[in-house]
Amino acid sequence: MPKTYSDPAAAAPAVRPAAARGAAPPARSAPTAFSESTLSGPAMGTRWSARYQAPPDFDHGALSRGLARAVESVDAQMSPWKPDSDLMRLNRAEPEHWVSLPAALIEVLARALDVGVLSGGAYDAAVGGLVDAWGFGAAADTPDPAAIRHAAADHRPAHLWLDLDREQGRARKRAPLTLDLCGIAKGYAVDRMAQVMALHGVGHALVGLDGELRACGARADGRPWAVALESPQEGRRAAHGVIELADLSVATSGDYRRWVRIGGERLAHTMDGRRAAPVRNPVASVTVLAAECMDADAWATALLVAGPDEGPALARRMGLDALFLLRRGGRLVEFGLGRFAS
Image (tube, rainbow, N blue to C red; front, side):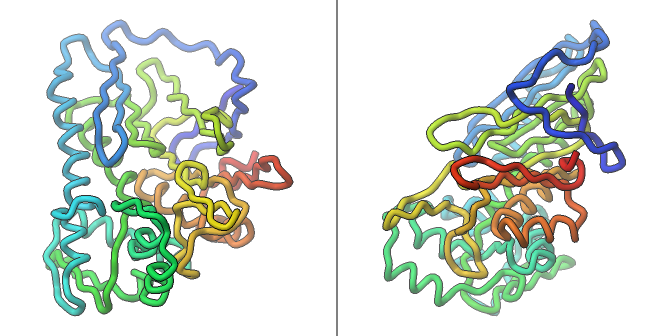
């Protein structure tokens, strides 16, 4: 029987296995004044999506334009693939030079640095050079040993080498840094989509970008939104389980979407800045719940990097709701904390 994830004060539910989805509890009929619609569009190398319930006379076109503008604005500011993005402008700046930045980028950088400090560097926004050297960047090159050695030698963690002046809206690198916000920017874009929903008076919606999702309220009939958790099995797209959300965000980081095989070793695209190398541990994926999708996104990345021992300890210390899927002996082992523990 499904349980519901809602605000942080809610009771702790378990993940319902995909094979046991069964009949849901009887639901109240949705008010006839509401109908469900979907919108989607390309953004940030993937697609944004929105499911929502609104009155028949609702202006869907205005909502679609607002959602697209919100995601495009985040992409224009924070993309590591667009040479003219504000993030790339900061990356090109000389050390010790203050760079004026948009308020949204300052907000995301501040949260990235906070999570970097709290995670002991497991989350690091300055892994862009490593991402490029290992062939996961915009050029998508074959990993180059010389470039990898150079990137590792030059790596400096963002939370120690990037200064923010939030009052003046500016940032300064104290050493050459290549910042990459892929572990947090999509979550922030989802939060911006939720803001657009609120501005348009939509109180029943599920918005998402790739694997990051945020439920804006519940459905109009009071039922939560059902969300499938992707199984990290190679070679197939399947659901590991289903959770149900209301007024909450969820994000998953894993080793199964983008990876390379070097010398017989399978290496995922997520970088461990502490080792200046790709993550090497048996954690297949980590799913995190949080009020803001930006937080869920960043902490899912941090816990994946932290690994099977340090990750759960970090999640406990931070009071996070986290689901770890570990590769053990050819099978997946599930380990949950907080509302995933039952």
